[in-house]
Each structure stands twice: as structure tokens, then as C-alpha cells.
Image (cartoon, each protein chain N blue to C red):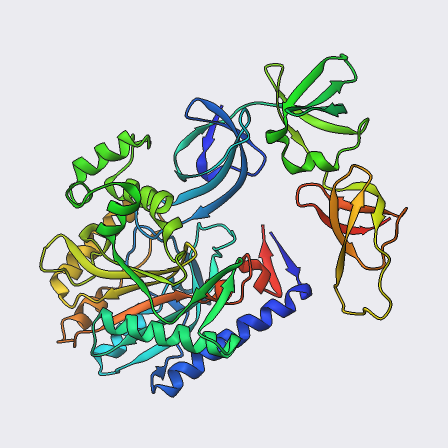
Amino acid sequence: MKVTTKIENLKNYKKLLKLKNGIKSFFDAKGYLELELPVMSPVLIPESYIEIFKTQFIYFDQKQDFYLTSSPELFIKRLIAKGVKNCYYLGKAFRNSEPNSDRHSPEFMILEFYNVPADYRDVESTMLELFQHLSQILYKSNGFSYHGKKISVEKFERLSVTEAFDKYANIDEKTLLDENLFVAAAKDKGYVIKNSTYEDLFSQIYTQEIEPNLGVNGFPTVIYDYPIAFAPLCKPNPDGKTAQRFEIYISGVELGNCYNELTDWKILQKRFKKEAQLRKDKNMISHKIDYDFIEVMKKDLPPYSGIAVGVERLAMVFGDVDAIEKLQLITNSL
Amino acid sequence: MSTYAGNLKKGEFIIHQSEIWQIQKSEFYSPGKGSALMRTKIKNVKSGKNIDYTYKSNESVETVDVNSIEMQYLYKDQEFAYFMDEQSYNQYQVPLSVVGRAIEFFKEGEKMFVYIHDDQPLSVRAPLSVTLKIVQTEDAVKGDTVSGAKKEAELETGVKVMVPLFIKVGEKISVNPETGQYTGRQ
């Protein structure tokens, strides 16, 4: 690992700055409260698919573990419970055990914004307005080119996860929502099912067969309503099998992930236990669990919805740059 | 031999669905649910066909042991490029579709590394840079001072590349044979 200075990236870096300032001006003009938040926390919400960074505060013989946050949601939801309405955070987040790649960096800039009171369709509308605002700032137009293809942000293409599996992977709704049928279908397709869970195979087929088709028809694609296993903290749909979550893509690049937030603290509590146990089983770094968060959620929260957006990825796509690293002046590369 | 898919690196050879493929690109990806993934672009060493395949990062993938042997590039025909091992004088043929566009930048008699497995050639490791002479290009138009402007030039192997306006016939330039990009003047 070494520190590399890349002054040749100055032009791309300025695109990132322009985009970041564009995000700020968009939300400030709409009256969202900007949140300055810590990136270290003494407790975390347990998540079995995100590894954490652990550090320690030391003062004489007093020692206190801290963790770098993978998302600011534990702070923001506390504030929403205290009555904060529309708000956003634009700052650093950290995810361990995810090596550098074109679209990944263990340390990254996250935009997380919440619409309160609202549901996920409101967040979708706000995202469309944000895309238009950014495209206007960068290109004075509601369209731009990415990798030689024209993208218009006049509207979103929309399809549900079940429609997408039917259309691109030839897996019908019944098979998609039944774990045994789905695993059998994956086996027929030639995927290795040994030691693979339903979640593993879903992610693999989604990445291999669905994602390359998202956001490639001239508009960004919103793909919505995931099987409940993939949206456990989202409001369930009346069908009881899917829940209200969407992701947004341009040219196969995932740019944001939105939850229609679940406000039932009892389900949340169960979820905490399950995720904490999974972390133990998988020998992941142990951390103190944010049980106070459940207490906070016992308050009557208004319906609300939030989205997390990878800002470097957004700058990559809107700035027509190949890789996150090409946006940075200083990189910590392996 | 086998490895976790999460460790696959560009250039390695693997077995995928009973055939040998070379990794062209690999990228870690964590979708946030289910296991982390390794997105790869792989090239079949028989047909030269490229496909995208997504592995689970903890999935075991069989790797292929190869020797890279320095050989002399002899010539090519419609289908194959021919190489000779200067130690054993054995000749090997590699499909042009497997060598890729880099072949257009190879000069007969040049040395390069060929990957061998079970005495079968799998692929060719193109050098990072090759030096070639310009045989044809227009003279720069005076007053054309747009920075970064390029023109077409034909190299001694017959391939055409884009070069800066100041390059003249007879000069030698270096080119990256994988991308065909001009990288400097000799």
C-alpha cells in the first residue's frame, strides 16, 4: 500500500467537485437540512454483508473502541425521530474487505438523503430532479454521453425486479419468489449451487444477467420491489412477498439504493439479532451493537424514505470517466 | 490447483465449464446482500471468444499452470500466428482471434512470450510497448495548432494508428500493441 499523487487527474477531479457542489446547491435550494455528522461511532447497526473498520481511542488506561461508519443512517434516523424533516448528508463512509476497483473504494463519498414524510416514489421524483439539475450544471442540457452512449435524464425507465428476471433471465415470478425453485433454476443455468444460499445465487444472477441491461436504453433505469429477503428493513407490499426498495442504474452502473423505511421496531429488533448472529457465524469483526437505536425507533415515526448514493460513481457516469481512481488527486493503492 | 474467485487477476488462465480461458479483466463487487462477487471478462483460448462471467468471490476456481517461453514470431496466415521456441526449434501456432489486435503490431523475427500448457500454446503475452517506423503520413498543415490534434499514420507492419501532428515519415514511434495507442517518439 502506498500513497500516490495523481495531479494528472486534476481535470476529472474538478468534475467531481462540480458535481458535489451541484448536489449541495440542489438540496440547499429545496430547503433540505444539511447534516454534518461523525464518521466514527462507538456502536453500529449490525450488517452481515458489510465489513467494518475498527479503531481505538486511548487516554492513559482508558480505552474505547470506535468504528468508522459504513453509512450515516444510525445518526440520521435518530434526528428524524426528534422531528427533523427533509435532510441530507454528503461526506465520507467506509467499507472494509472491499478492494479498490473501477467502481469500488473502501473509503468513499456518500450522499444520503431522506424525504420526511414521504414514500419511495417521492424519493424517486427527487432523484430525477437531482439528475436533471446535475446534467444542467455540467452540460446545460438534460442529456449527456457516457462511454459514447447518449443518456437522457428527461425521465426514468421503470421495471420491477420480477419483470426484470422474467425479461432478462427467463425466470418467472413464481420461481423467483420460491427459494427451492430458484436454486433449481440457477443449477439448470449452470451456476455452482454448492455452499450457495438463495441470496448468493440471486445476487449472482442479478449481477450476471440483469444489471448489464439496466440503464442502457437511453434513460436511467429504476428497478423496484425486491423479494423480502433483499429488503428486510423496507415496508412490505400487500403481496407479502416483495418489499418497497429501488435501485437506480445508468449503463449497468448502480448509482443508488432506496428504502421505503420500515417503522416497526419489533421487526427491526429481530433483524438486529439475526444480523449480529450472522456476523458471529462468519467470523466478522465484532462490534458493539446500537441497541439504543431500537429504543429510538419505538417512537411513532412518520412514513419516510431515504436513498444512499455513491458520489464518485455518480461523478464517473455524469463526467464520463472510466474509474473512481481517475477522479482522485491522492490515491491509496495496493 | 484452485483459488478463490476473489483472487483472480488479469492474465491468469482458468478452467470454466471444462474449457481454458484467460482472465481479461476482474473486478470485485459487493452487491450488499448475498456473498460478494467477482465480475470477470474471460477469453476462450481456443475460439478467442470473450464473455462476461460473475463468480461468487468465495467460489473455488480451477487455475491452469502455464510456462511463458520466449519465442520468435515467424509469420501469420489467415488463421494463425506462428512462433518458434529458439531452444527446441519447436514451432507453435496460436489462433489470430486469441492473439487479438496486438498481432497487427508484431514484426516478423521479434521475440515475445508465448504461454504454454501441456506443450500446447494458449496465448501470447504482447509486450507493453513496441517500436515501429512510420511509412506513410500527411505533413502537418501549418497553423493547425489545436493542442492534442491527431492524424492517421501507417506503420511498417501495415497497421494505421493516430499520431500527433508533428510526427513525420521515417520516424520511429512507440505504441501499446494492446490498445493501438501512440505512447511516444523514439
